[in-house]
Length: 91
Image (cartoon, rainbow, N blue to C red; front, side, top):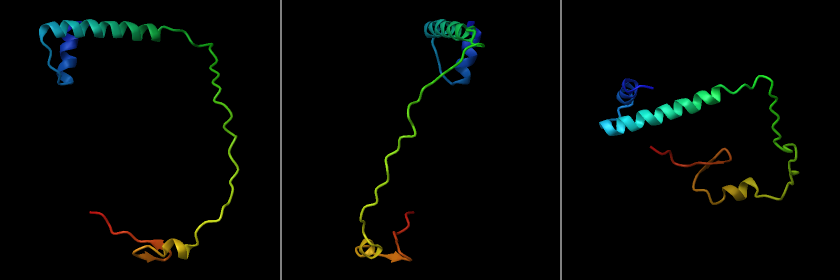
């Protein structure tokens, strides 16, 4: 990557660099570009990816326990309608 490209990128991203920082950023972007191109050069056509996630079918059994009746649950509610607790709307 050349300096004019770095200047264009800095203008597009609205980042200002002085000359020294611009040279440093150009070098860093060149290193990044080299690294990314080396990753792209890796041949993986014949690779089989096998990821083992684990046993996802193991779920705990649902156990029904005694709970509040609807009357008991609504007894302390300030307002209720059709068996549901009503809350004031927020603006």
